Length: 263
Image (cartoon, rainbow, N blue to C red):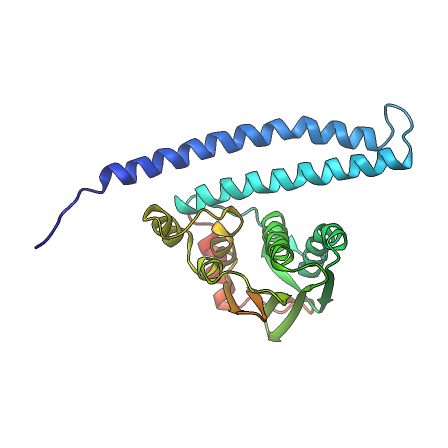
């Protein structure tokens, strides 16, 4: 016996939901702009002097605003990736600087939770071209995910190395606790596959991981993850780089560049 069902209403509903998310996310992000602007103005004492405690409070507010802005951007990227509309803002970027900035963004929370953080950065190369904002955001999100899974007194880390010529490897890890296997599998799926799994009720919505695979792929790279129960979890991101000596881009990098500029 064969059962044939029309999935068109479900697909249409998914499209409407993505459109709604797109509109709401844009509106929410616009509302954060004045909040961030005035917070930064207050912090610079433009309206009068502030004391040390007030400065620290304003810093906390500014960090919270940025976290919210990043999550809204993650929603927008998830929607765009699922509709094949995600486009990178390409510029020449220094990969070690971006990794360091991402680590700095998580350091405050790691100290508060008494979680040690290891940062090991090899500074020998830079990315040929990439989207600095998106790379920094996904690095921060993955490292924050490691912190989320770490018990108090645990240890997390990020390592940037170059195992082969022309390729950077970012290794994010957490010791002691392991991420749910479903989370690891989600990271390996592309945006379309994640959307299909969610539509069938097999996966929950995970905003921070939704577009990571797509962003890395558009940079000509790939992602992987492994989790050992009771031992820890490791996330790997592989990205093409250009050595500081000025070595020419590889054919794979040129193909990736062309793919990123598709319509």
